[in-house]
Length: 193
Image 1 (cartoon, rainbow, N blue to C red):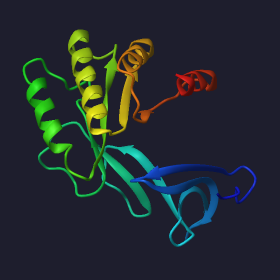
Image 2 (image 1 turned 60 degrees about the vertical axis):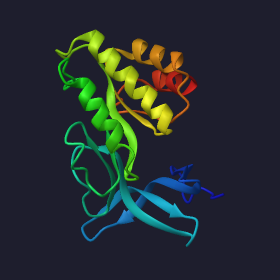
Image 3 (image 1 turned 180 degrees about the vertical axis):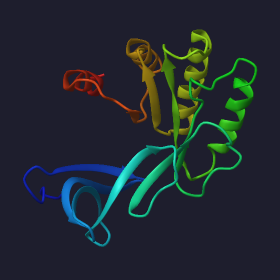
Image 4 (image 1 turned 90 degrees about the vertical axis):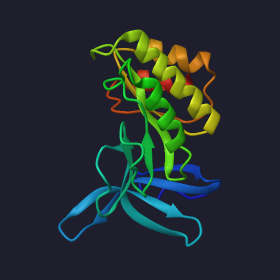
């Protein structure tokens, strides 16, 4: 166990592939240009901090000094070798092809570098048919549970519906809400859910 190195620093303990790591936030790291607040991994093997930005959801490949999970919503047959997530994004789900895309997602997600399912979810503001969004999201929840992979969620004006599905399916894998910009009270409610 690690004490927080400074005031205003948070330490998160988690396990990656059964090995404990700590993620420390708000460390003041000096770069060649100026001090910057960054996150850092704590490696329990060498007992050192490795300062870097941690981005658990990006549509771009990792940049130097960044540990990134690249998110893909298409081209599942051409995934990066780096950690990535794959999902049927509600904006791009089509009635004619979603089942084929789901089969491709399932096959691709067997690769060890696919560390999460998503970005998937529900969006009341997009043009995709609501019932189709629900079927695609439900199928991806089932697959994430079967493969024991975290879910990265897209949720626009559909929080009650997303939470209902997560509860109904008794989701036991980690869930990450992408782009969460709501209140602390709502964040606390989600954590309790």
